[in-house]
Image 1 (cartoon, one colour):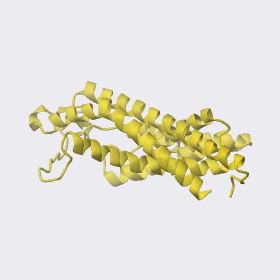
Image 2 (cartoon, one colour):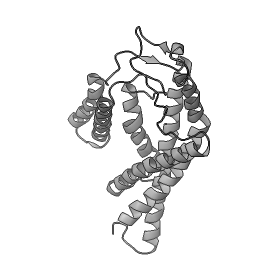
Image 3 (cartoon, helix red, strand yellow):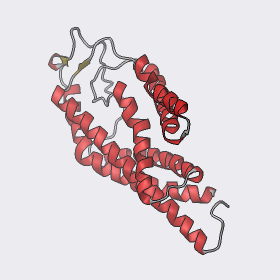
Image 4 (cartoon, helix red, strand yellow):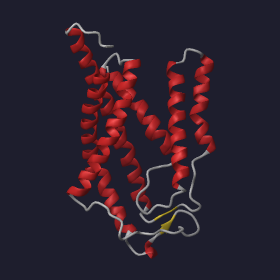
Length: 239
């Protein structure tokens, strides 16, 4: 079983990471590069979404960052691979508890992961371009983790619980983090134009949606394929 999970996660993570990197290279990365030109421009070119000035934007000239081209693509691919394999391990482990009846069900698992790790946190902490004012990092991380956890628990109760009371409890758990509210900066300000920010948010949401659906489909197909092979060989898939 552990070998089955590892193989499913490894191949799924590799393919999903390549898909995500390809999507990001053609849509998300160009927007980030464009935003970096505003970040490196004089502070006088900054625009604000609210009255007041953005507090303390500092650009560390000595901080290492990958150069445009193969270094940036390689760094992005490596990061995507680590994330994709981790999420694929989670999906494969869940399949051992409730195996998808078909490959299409894998897409539903992928959409559930998208809701938990992308959509719900984005409602309070949308994707940000370089040069955007943000709240304290630790506070944002705590809220993000709490939101993802409550969304996972809430969805699980809504989908799998048989009691109407538990389903209602799941719905309540879903909205708790949003009632509390995500930490916000004192002033909402950004260096990039609003149109670029809006396009970046849409690009991030759609590329992540495709990434999660692809990961769900691929992982379900691989998991069921290994199950079929073991069945043909006369082995117990649970071993």
